[in-house]
Image 1 (cartoon, rainbow, N blue to C red):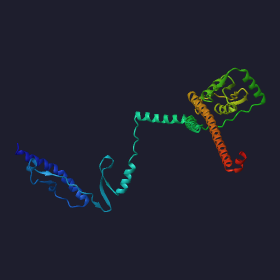
Image 2: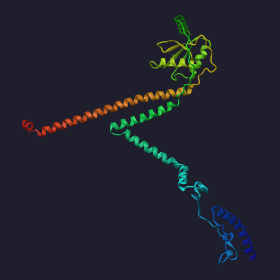
Image 3: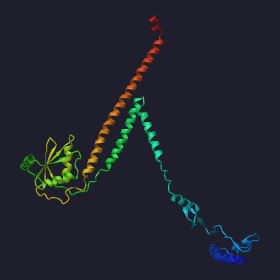
Image 4: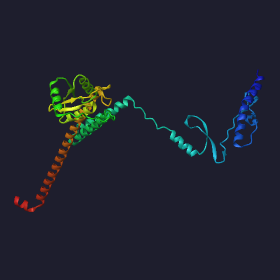
Length: 337
């Protein structure tokens, strides 16, 4: 068995050296160099002990990239895999830098986040309990302004794009017809409420449902700011294609459906908010209004404080100047004696 080992090892080495020799020959032909003998791939050991002393050992030959003309063949190992490339190395390096993605941000642990929040709260607590009134006012003012910006960003999500609609041609009514429609609208008890949500799809839907059985419908706007009833009347006219007959002092609008009224297939317009989103928008608008009033109050308070400080400094300066003049003036001292 010991005698057969060198022969088996020699056969395996010769077989493994054959494909290496063919690869070496093709590489030499491509680069224009003279093909080297396949025997160069196999080296017989000169001495030593063990199985290598009785058999053959081989090693691979590596060659540096050969410049052929104005281009160079190189082995690029960037990106996690090896590939051959031909061209300028500087450009390739620039492309490799472009491919590199920015480093990912390290995720903070839960304990680090808690510590950061504690630090911010401690900092805010120091400002809130500062002995200087200006520091306290400025902290509240900055916080209110940040909240105002956040509310404005929230309200932008509820802006519905107005789709281009055909121009509505209102019907011409005589004075007698308007008087009759006004009286009939007043006498009837059915109405559509416009509450804190304002004008949304459900209001227009209820108007069309009332117009199915009646020519007129009352729209009661409560709560309503002074002058807001006219904005509601204009918006409902655009959405429902009705005609405004009268606007009463108690924020009530009477709408007429028209002589050639046809109930639309989609009674709730698509460019309106839903009931839930209209309520969310109202809450954000209310919060924005209160925040604006609070900011005005703080700005006035800060201005009054700065005026008070300036006046106090002026008084201190005047008293110090008076004391210096009395000390330096000899006539005043002689009179006092």
